[in-house]
Image (cartoon, rainbow, N blue to C red; front, side, top):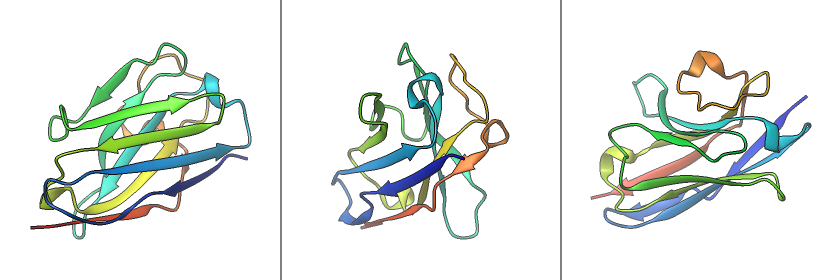
Length: 126
C-alpha cells in the first residue's frame, strides 16, 4: 500500500511563492513517476505537473509553465512542487499522485494514477 502525505500549503499574496512537499512511503519511490494535480471549487481535478522516475523528465500544464517546478528527492522519498509568481487562479486543493506500476515516462492523465494524498489547500489572495 502506498501512502502519500502533502504539506506546505497556505495563504499567500499574489506574486508570492510556496513549496509543496509530498512524502511517499510503501514502495520503492525512485522507480515510479509522480504527479501533482489540483482541484478548485466547482471545477474538475486538473493536471499541474509530472516527473518521470529516474531521468527527471518533466511536463507542466500550460497555465503553470515557467512559474512552477516539480522535483523529487529519491533518497528521501519526497516529491516537491515549487510555486512562484502565484496568481489568484492558482487557488485550489493540491494533490500528489502515484501510479499503480513503475513508469519511466511522465504521466499526465489522472486516470493513469491510482494513489492520491489527502491534499493541501493553497489560497492566493489578490
